[in-house]
Length: 454
Image 1 (cartoon, rainbow, N blue to C red):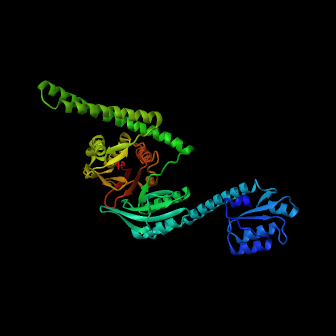
Image 2: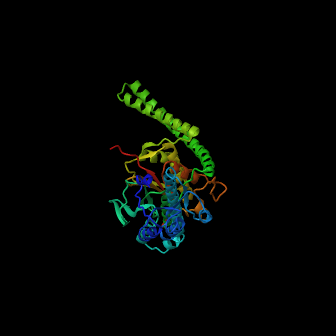
Protein backbone atom coordinates (compact mmCIF):
# COMPACT_ATOMS: atom_id res chain seq x y z
CA UNK A 1 0.00 0.00 0.00
CA UNK A 2 2.81 2.40 -0.88
CA UNK A 3 0.25 4.57 -2.72
CA UNK A 4 -1.45 5.38 0.61
CA UNK A 5 1.50 5.62 2.99
CA UNK A 6 2.43 9.10 1.83
CA UNK A 7 -0.91 10.53 3.06
CA UNK A 8 -2.06 8.02 5.70
CA UNK A 9 -0.53 5.96 8.48
CA UNK A 10 -0.80 2.41 7.17
CA UNK A 11 -0.64 -0.82 9.21
CA UNK A 12 -0.44 -4.13 7.30
CA UNK A 13 -1.18 -7.74 8.38
CA UNK A 14 -0.68 -10.96 6.44
CA UNK A 15 -3.71 -13.11 7.32
CA UNK A 16 -7.36 -12.85 8.29
CA UNK A 17 -6.57 -14.06 11.81
CA UNK A 18 -4.06 -11.25 12.31
CA UNK A 19 -6.66 -8.82 11.01
CA UNK A 20 -9.19 -10.05 13.61
CA UNK A 21 -6.65 -9.52 16.39
CA UNK A 22 -5.82 -5.98 15.22
CA UNK A 23 -9.47 -5.03 14.80
CA UNK A 24 -10.22 -6.23 18.32
CA UNK A 25 -7.47 -4.14 19.91
CA UNK A 26 -7.47 -0.93 17.86
CA UNK A 27 -9.81 1.45 16.02
CA UNK A 28 -9.15 2.22 12.34
CA UNK A 29 -10.63 4.71 9.90
CA UNK A 30 -10.20 2.50 6.83
CA UNK A 31 -9.98 -1.29 6.49
CA UNK A 32 -8.81 -2.67 3.14
CA UNK A 33 -8.91 -6.43 2.64
CA UNK A 34 -8.11 -8.74 -0.27
CA UNK A 35 -10.92 -11.14 -1.16
CA UNK A 36 -8.64 -14.19 -1.20
CA UNK A 37 -6.47 -14.93 1.85
CA UNK A 38 -5.02 -18.15 3.35
CA UNK A 39 -7.38 -18.54 6.31
CA UNK A 40 -10.33 -16.08 6.26
CA UNK A 41 -11.45 -14.26 3.15
CA UNK A 42 -11.91 -10.53 2.79
CA UNK A 43 -15.69 -10.67 3.23
CA UNK A 44 -15.29 -12.21 6.69
CA UNK A 45 -12.67 -9.62 7.65
CA UNK A 46 -14.79 -6.68 6.52
CA UNK A 47 -17.90 -8.04 8.24
CA UNK A 48 -15.88 -8.45 11.46
CA UNK A 49 -14.71 -4.83 11.05
CA UNK A 50 -18.29 -3.59 10.61
CA UNK A 51 -19.24 -5.17 13.97
CA UNK A 52 -16.15 -4.13 15.94
CA UNK A 53 -15.21 -0.69 14.56
CA UNK A 54 -16.91 2.71 14.68
CA UNK A 55 -18.28 3.41 11.16
CA UNK A 56 -15.13 2.38 9.29
CA UNK A 57 -14.60 2.83 5.57
CA UNK A 58 -14.36 -0.78 4.27
CA UNK A 59 -12.77 -1.64 0.91
CA UNK A 60 -12.71 -5.06 -0.79
CA UNK A 61 -9.87 -5.78 -3.23
CA UNK A 62 -10.59 -8.39 -5.87
CA UNK A 63 -9.82 -9.22 -9.48
CA UNK A 64 -13.04 -11.20 -9.94
CA UNK A 65 -16.38 -11.73 -8.17
CA UNK A 66 -17.78 -15.12 -7.26
CA UNK A 67 -21.44 -15.46 -6.23
CA UNK A 68 -20.74 -14.94 -2.51
CA UNK A 69 -18.72 -11.79 -3.12
CA UNK A 70 -21.40 -10.50 -5.48
CA UNK A 71 -24.08 -10.93 -2.77
CA UNK A 72 -21.88 -9.18 -0.18
CA UNK A 73 -21.40 -6.19 -2.46
CA UNK A 74 -25.13 -5.92 -3.19
CA UNK A 75 -26.37 -5.91 0.42
CA UNK A 76 -27.10 -2.74 2.44
CA UNK A 77 -24.01 -1.10 3.96
CA UNK A 78 -21.83 -2.95 1.46
CA UNK A 79 -18.08 -2.25 1.34
CA UNK A 80 -16.46 -0.36 -1.49
CA UNK A 81 -14.99 -2.54 -4.26
CA UNK A 82 -11.67 -1.88 -5.97
CA UNK A 83 -10.60 -4.09 -8.87
CA UNK A 84 -7.08 -5.22 -9.56
CA UNK A 85 -4.74 -3.62 -10.45
CA UNK A 86 -5.78 -1.02 -7.87
CA UNK A 87 -2.89 1.49 -7.89
CA UNK A 88 -4.80 4.32 -9.58
CA UNK A 89 -8.18 3.65 -7.97
CA UNK A 90 -7.49 2.85 -4.33
CA UNK A 91 -6.52 6.38 -3.24
CA UNK A 92 -9.61 7.88 -4.88
CA UNK A 93 -11.92 5.34 -3.23
CA UNK A 94 -10.38 5.86 0.22
CA UNK A 95 -10.67 9.64 -0.05
CA UNK A 96 -14.27 9.42 -1.27
CA UNK A 97 -15.16 6.97 1.49
CA UNK A 98 -13.74 9.24 4.20
CA UNK A 99 -15.62 12.25 2.77
CA UNK A 100 -18.90 10.32 2.72
CA UNK A 101 -18.35 9.15 6.27
CA UNK A 102 -17.74 12.72 7.44
CA UNK A 103 -20.97 13.87 5.78
CA UNK A 104 -22.88 11.02 7.40
CA UNK A 105 -21.42 11.85 10.81
CA UNK A 106 -22.43 15.50 10.49
CA UNK A 107 -25.94 14.58 9.44
CA UNK A 108 -26.30 12.12 12.30
CA UNK A 109 -24.96 14.70 14.77
CA UNK A 110 -27.39 17.33 13.48
CA UNK A 111 -30.34 14.98 13.87
CA UNK A 112 -29.23 13.99 17.37
CA UNK A 113 -28.78 17.63 18.35
CA UNK A 114 -32.21 18.56 17.01
CA UNK A 115 -33.88 15.70 18.86
CA UNK A 116 -32.10 16.63 22.08
CA UNK A 117 -33.74 20.09 21.92
CA UNK A 118 -37.26 18.66 21.82
CA UNK A 119 -37.79 19.27 25.55
CA UNK A 120 -35.70 22.47 25.82
CA UNK A 121 -38.75 24.68 26.37
CA UNK A 122 -39.94 22.43 29.21
CA UNK A 123 -36.56 22.59 30.90
CA UNK A 124 -36.32 26.37 30.51
CA UNK A 125 -39.81 26.73 31.99
CA UNK A 126 -38.58 25.15 35.24
CA UNK A 127 -35.83 27.76 35.72
CA UNK A 128 -36.50 30.50 38.25
CA UNK A 129 -33.36 32.65 38.12
CA UNK A 130 -31.00 33.96 35.40
CA UNK A 131 -28.32 31.65 36.78
CA UNK A 132 -30.49 28.56 36.29
CA UNK A 133 -31.45 29.63 32.77
CA UNK A 134 -27.82 30.31 31.85
CA UNK A 135 -26.69 26.93 33.20
CA UNK A 136 -29.31 25.12 31.09
CA UNK A 137 -28.33 26.93 27.88
CA UNK A 138 -24.58 26.44 28.41
CA UNK A 139 -24.97 22.76 29.28
CA UNK A 140 -27.13 22.18 26.21
CA UNK A 141 -24.77 24.22 24.03
CA UNK A 142 -21.71 22.20 25.02
CA UNK A 143 -23.57 19.03 23.98
CA UNK A 144 -23.95 20.27 20.38
CA UNK A 145 -21.61 18.65 17.86
CA UNK A 146 -19.27 21.28 16.42
CA UNK A 147 -19.24 23.64 19.44
CA UNK A 148 -15.72 24.52 20.66
CA UNK A 149 -16.61 26.76 23.62
CA UNK A 150 -19.77 28.06 25.25
CA UNK A 151 -20.44 30.37 28.20
CA UNK A 152 -22.44 33.35 29.40
CA UNK A 153 -21.44 36.85 30.46
CA UNK A 154 -23.20 39.77 32.15
CA UNK A 155 -22.90 43.33 30.85
CA UNK A 156 -22.98 46.11 33.45
CA UNK A 157 -21.84 49.70 33.80
CA UNK A 158 -18.55 48.36 35.15
CA UNK A 159 -17.94 46.22 32.04
CA UNK A 160 -18.56 42.55 31.26
CA UNK A 161 -18.19 39.69 33.71
CA UNK A 162 -18.17 35.88 33.28
CA UNK A 163 -21.38 34.30 34.54
CA UNK A 164 -21.51 30.59 33.70
CA UNK A 165 -19.46 28.22 31.57
CA UNK A 166 -15.97 28.76 30.27
CA UNK A 167 -14.25 31.63 28.50
CA UNK A 168 -15.15 32.01 24.82
CA UNK A 169 -12.46 33.77 22.75
CA UNK A 170 -13.72 36.32 20.22
CA UNK A 171 -10.91 35.44 17.81
CA UNK A 172 -10.08 31.92 16.68
CA UNK A 173 -11.13 29.04 14.47
CA UNK A 174 -14.69 28.92 13.15
CA UNK A 175 -17.44 31.39 14.00
CA UNK A 176 -18.19 33.46 17.12
CA UNK A 177 -21.63 34.51 18.36
CA UNK A 178 -22.82 36.73 21.19
CA UNK A 179 -26.60 36.63 21.69
CA UNK A 180 -28.78 38.20 24.39
CA UNK A 181 -30.75 35.85 26.63
CA UNK A 182 -32.76 38.14 28.91
CA UNK A 183 -35.15 41.03 28.43
CA UNK A 184 -32.58 43.76 29.10
CA UNK A 185 -29.82 42.24 26.96
CA UNK A 186 -27.49 42.22 29.97
CA UNK A 187 -27.17 38.43 30.13
CA UNK A 188 -25.58 37.16 26.90
CA UNK A 189 -24.63 33.77 25.52
CA UNK A 190 -21.25 33.43 23.84
CA UNK A 191 -20.31 30.49 21.68
CA UNK A 192 -17.62 29.49 19.22
CA UNK A 193 -18.05 26.60 16.80
CA UNK A 194 -17.08 25.10 13.49
CA UNK A 195 -20.23 24.02 11.62
CA UNK A 196 -23.21 25.96 10.28
CA UNK A 197 -25.62 23.46 11.82
CA UNK A 198 -24.09 24.14 15.25
CA UNK A 199 -24.47 27.89 14.71
CA UNK A 200 -28.15 27.42 13.80
CA UNK A 201 -28.77 25.35 16.93
CA UNK A 202 -27.08 27.90 19.20
CA UNK A 203 -29.23 30.66 17.68
CA UNK A 204 -32.31 28.52 18.25
CA UNK A 205 -31.44 27.91 21.91
CA UNK A 206 -30.83 31.62 22.52
CA UNK A 207 -34.15 32.38 20.82
CA UNK A 208 -36.00 29.94 23.11
CA UNK A 209 -34.26 31.41 26.17
CA UNK A 210 -35.45 34.87 25.12
CA UNK A 211 -38.98 33.51 24.80
CA UNK A 212 -38.73 32.11 28.31
CA UNK A 213 -37.83 35.65 29.47
CA UNK A 214 -40.75 37.20 27.58
CA UNK A 215 -38.68 38.58 24.67
CA UNK A 216 -39.94 38.26 21.08
CA UNK A 217 -37.26 38.95 18.47
CA UNK A 218 -37.76 39.55 14.75
CA UNK A 219 -36.82 36.54 12.65
CA UNK A 220 -34.22 36.69 9.88
CA UNK A 221 -35.64 36.23 6.37
CA UNK A 222 -33.49 33.72 4.50
CA UNK A 223 -32.50 34.46 0.90
CA UNK A 224 -34.37 31.53 -0.67
CA UNK A 225 -37.04 31.78 -3.38
CA UNK A 226 -39.80 32.61 -0.92
CA UNK A 227 -37.53 34.97 0.99
CA UNK A 228 -36.68 36.80 -2.24
CA UNK A 229 -40.32 37.59 -2.86
CA UNK A 230 -40.69 38.80 0.73
CA UNK A 231 -37.53 40.87 0.32
CA UNK A 232 -38.97 42.52 -2.79
CA UNK A 233 -42.18 43.31 -0.92
CA UNK A 234 -40.30 44.73 2.05
CA UNK A 235 -38.00 46.74 -0.19
CA UNK A 236 -41.01 48.36 -1.88
CA UNK A 237 -42.70 49.04 1.47
CA UNK A 238 -39.50 50.48 2.90
CA UNK A 239 -39.11 52.65 -0.16
CA UNK A 240 -42.59 54.10 0.38
CA UNK A 241 -41.84 54.90 4.01
CA UNK A 242 -38.46 56.34 3.04
CA UNK A 243 -40.05 58.60 0.42
CA UNK A 244 -42.49 60.04 2.95
CA UNK A 245 -39.69 60.67 5.44
CA UNK A 246 -37.44 62.09 2.75
CA UNK A 247 -40.01 64.72 1.80
CA UNK A 248 -40.29 65.71 5.47
CA UNK A 249 -36.51 65.85 5.87
CA UNK A 250 -36.13 67.73 2.60
CA UNK A 251 -38.56 70.43 3.75
CA UNK A 252 -36.72 70.79 7.08
CA UNK A 253 -33.33 70.79 5.36
CA UNK A 254 -34.34 73.40 2.82
CA UNK A 255 -35.62 75.60 5.63
CA UNK A 256 -32.20 75.29 7.26
CA UNK A 257 -30.49 76.08 3.95
CA UNK A 258 -32.68 79.16 3.45
CA UNK A 259 -31.93 80.35 6.97
CA UNK A 260 -28.19 79.83 6.48
CA UNK A 261 -28.18 81.79 3.21
CA UNK A 262 -30.27 84.57 4.76
CA UNK A 263 -27.76 84.79 7.58
CA UNK A 264 -24.91 84.99 5.10
CA UNK A 265 -26.63 87.78 3.18
CA UNK A 266 -27.24 89.72 6.40
CA UNK A 267 -23.55 89.48 7.26
CA UNK A 268 -22.60 90.75 3.83
CA UNK A 269 -25.00 93.70 4.11
CA UNK A 270 -23.83 94.61 7.61
CA UNK A 271 -20.17 94.02 6.90
CA UNK A 272 -20.04 91.76 9.94
CA UNK A 273 -17.45 88.96 10.44
CA UNK A 274 -18.57 85.30 10.34
CA UNK A 275 -19.46 85.16 6.65
CA UNK A 276 -17.17 82.20 6.06
CA UNK A 277 -18.86 80.19 8.83
CA UNK A 278 -22.35 81.00 7.54
CA UNK A 279 -21.44 79.88 4.02
CA UNK A 280 -19.95 76.66 5.42
CA UNK A 281 -23.26 75.97 7.21
CA UNK A 282 -25.14 76.52 3.96
CA UNK A 283 -22.80 74.18 2.09
CA UNK A 284 -23.17 71.50 4.77
CA UNK A 285 -26.94 71.74 4.55
CA UNK A 286 -26.82 71.44 0.78
CA UNK A 287 -24.56 68.39 1.04
CA UNK A 288 -27.09 66.79 3.39
CA UNK A 289 -29.81 67.19 0.74
CA UNK A 290 -27.57 65.63 -1.91
CA UNK A 291 -26.67 62.66 0.31
CA UNK A 292 -30.33 61.97 1.06
CA UNK A 293 -31.09 61.72 -2.64
CA UNK A 294 -27.97 59.66 -3.42
CA UNK A 295 -28.84 57.16 -0.72
CA UNK A 296 -32.42 56.88 -1.91
CA UNK A 297 -31.37 56.45 -5.55
CA UNK A 298 -29.00 53.58 -4.66
CA UNK A 299 -31.69 51.86 -2.63
CA UNK A 300 -34.26 52.24 -5.46
CA UNK A 301 -31.88 50.98 -8.13
CA UNK A 302 -29.90 48.23 -6.43
CA UNK A 303 -31.33 47.76 -2.95
CA UNK A 304 -27.90 48.93 -1.82
CA UNK A 305 -27.45 49.95 1.79
CA UNK A 306 -24.31 52.02 2.28
CA UNK A 307 -23.54 52.15 5.98
CA UNK A 308 -21.15 54.68 7.46
CA UNK A 309 -20.28 56.03 10.91
CA UNK A 310 -22.95 58.46 12.14
CA UNK A 311 -23.11 60.11 15.58
CA UNK A 312 -25.87 58.56 17.65
CA UNK A 313 -26.86 62.03 18.84
CA UNK A 314 -27.54 63.13 15.26
CA UNK A 315 -29.78 60.13 14.55
CA UNK A 316 -31.78 60.71 17.75
CA UNK A 317 -32.13 64.41 16.96
CA UNK A 318 -33.41 63.51 13.48
CA UNK A 319 -35.87 60.98 14.93
CA UNK A 320 -37.11 63.63 17.37
CA UNK A 321 -37.49 66.11 14.52
CA UNK A 322 -39.31 63.57 12.33
CA UNK A 323 -41.65 61.96 14.88
CA UNK A 324 -41.44 64.20 17.93
CA UNK A 325 -44.35 66.42 16.93
CA UNK A 326 -46.66 63.43 16.50
CA UNK A 327 -45.48 61.93 19.79
CA UNK A 328 -46.08 65.12 21.75
CA UNK A 329 -49.64 65.34 20.44
CA UNK A 330 -50.40 62.01 22.15
CA UNK A 331 -47.94 61.67 25.04
CA UNK A 332 -44.90 63.19 26.71
CA UNK A 333 -41.58 62.31 25.07
CA UNK A 334 -38.57 61.79 27.32
CA UNK A 335 -35.12 61.21 25.81
CA UNK A 336 -32.47 59.92 28.18
CA UNK A 337 -28.78 60.80 28.18
CA UNK A 338 -27.30 60.13 24.73
CA UNK A 339 -23.85 58.46 24.76
CA UNK A 340 -21.16 60.07 22.63
CA UNK A 341 -20.72 57.21 20.17
CA UNK A 342 -21.00 56.59 16.44
CA UNK A 343 -23.16 53.86 14.94
CA UNK A 344 -22.64 52.11 11.59
CA UNK A 345 -25.85 52.84 9.67
CA UNK A 346 -27.51 53.97 6.48
CA UNK A 347 -28.87 57.04 8.23
CA UNK A 348 -32.08 57.62 6.27
CA UNK A 349 -33.10 53.96 6.60
CA UNK A 350 -32.26 53.55 10.27
CA UNK A 351 -34.13 56.75 11.02
CA UNK A 352 -37.31 54.95 9.87
CA UNK A 353 -36.90 52.38 12.62
CA UNK A 354 -36.64 54.91 15.44
CA UNK A 355 -39.35 57.19 14.07
CA UNK A 356 -41.74 54.27 13.59
CA UNK A 357 -41.16 52.97 17.12
CA UNK A 358 -41.72 56.44 18.58
CA UNK A 359 -44.98 56.90 16.64
CA UNK A 360 -46.23 53.45 17.65
CA UNK A 361 -45.41 54.12 21.29
CA UNK A 362 -47.24 57.46 21.20
CA UNK A 363 -50.31 55.91 19.55
CA UNK A 364 -50.45 53.21 22.23
CA UNK A 365 -49.96 55.53 25.22
CA UNK A 366 -52.88 57.12 27.07
CA UNK A 367 -53.25 60.91 27.15
CA UNK A 368 -50.63 62.25 29.52
CA UNK A 369 -48.60 59.03 29.32
CA UNK A 370 -44.89 58.90 28.69
CA UNK A 371 -42.77 57.62 25.82
CA UNK A 372 -39.13 57.01 26.81
CA UNK A 373 -36.19 56.69 24.43
CA UNK A 374 -33.05 55.44 26.17
CA UNK A 375 -29.61 54.37 24.93
CA UNK A 376 -26.72 52.41 26.34
CA UNK A 377 -23.43 51.17 24.90
CA UNK A 378 -21.55 47.86 24.94
CA UNK A 379 -18.15 47.03 23.46
CA UNK A 380 -19.70 46.18 20.09
CA UNK A 381 -23.23 47.61 19.98
CA UNK A 382 -25.52 50.47 20.86
CA UNK A 383 -28.81 49.37 22.44
CA UNK A 384 -31.84 51.66 22.13
CA UNK A 385 -35.13 51.08 23.94
CA UNK A 386 -38.51 52.72 23.36
CA UNK A 387 -41.01 52.18 26.20
CA UNK A 388 -44.61 53.40 26.46
CA UNK A 389 -47.47 53.39 28.97
CA UNK A 390 -49.91 51.53 26.72
CA UNK A 391 -51.47 48.05 27.05
CA UNK A 392 -48.68 46.18 25.24
CA UNK A 393 -48.93 44.20 22.01
CA UNK A 394 -52.17 42.29 21.51
CA UNK A 395 -51.78 38.60 22.28
CA UNK A 396 -53.23 37.53 18.93
CA UNK A 397 -50.38 39.16 16.96
CA UNK A 398 -47.54 38.90 19.49
CA UNK A 399 -45.85 36.01 17.70
CA UNK A 400 -46.24 37.56 14.23
CA UNK A 401 -45.86 41.28 14.96
CA UNK A 402 -42.72 41.54 12.80
CA UNK A 403 -44.38 39.85 9.82
CA UNK A 404 -45.96 41.93 7.03
CA UNK A 405 -49.63 42.92 7.56
CA UNK A 406 -49.69 41.89 11.24
CA UNK A 407 -52.27 44.39 12.51
CA UNK A 408 -55.37 44.25 14.66
CA UNK A 409 -57.13 47.26 13.14
CA UNK A 410 -58.24 48.07 9.65
CA UNK A 411 -56.64 51.52 9.91
CA UNK A 412 -53.08 50.20 10.05
CA UNK A 413 -51.16 48.58 7.20
CA UNK A 414 -49.31 46.23 9.51
CA UNK A 415 -46.02 47.05 7.72
CA UNK A 416 -44.35 49.39 10.22
CA UNK A 417 -42.71 46.73 12.40
CA UNK A 418 -42.04 44.51 9.38
CA UNK A 419 -40.16 47.38 7.73
CA UNK A 420 -38.25 47.97 10.97
CA UNK A 421 -37.26 44.28 11.14
CA UNK A 422 -36.23 44.35 7.47
CA UNK A 423 -34.05 47.44 7.95
CA UNK A 424 -32.43 45.97 11.07
CA UNK A 425 -31.61 42.79 9.17
CA UNK A 426 -29.88 44.85 6.48
CA UNK A 427 -27.87 46.55 9.23
CA UNK A 428 -26.87 43.22 10.84
CA UNK A 429 -28.70 44.38 13.95
CA UNK A 430 -31.67 43.12 15.96
CA UNK A 431 -35.10 44.33 17.02
CA UNK A 432 -37.13 42.66 19.76
CA UNK A 433 -40.20 43.21 21.92
CA UNK A 434 -41.01 42.52 25.56
CA UNK A 435 -43.74 43.62 27.91
CA UNK A 436 -42.32 45.97 30.52
CA UNK A 437 -43.09 44.71 34.00
CA UNK A 438 -44.46 48.07 35.21
CA UNK A 439 -45.52 49.80 32.00
CA UNK A 440 -46.50 48.82 28.46
CA UNK A 441 -44.58 47.77 25.34
CA UNK A 442 -40.80 47.93 25.28
CA UNK A 443 -39.00 47.61 21.96
CA UNK A 444 -35.24 47.11 21.87
CA UNK A 445 -33.04 47.91 18.87
CA UNK A 446 -29.43 46.70 18.83
CA UNK A 447 -27.18 48.30 16.19
CA UNK A 448 -23.41 47.80 15.66
CA UNK A 449 -21.08 50.55 16.77
CA UNK A 450 -18.83 52.13 14.17
CA UNK A 451 -15.30 50.73 14.21
CA UNK A 452 -12.84 53.09 15.81
CA UNK A 453 -9.54 53.33 13.94
CA UNK A 454 -6.72 52.00 16.06
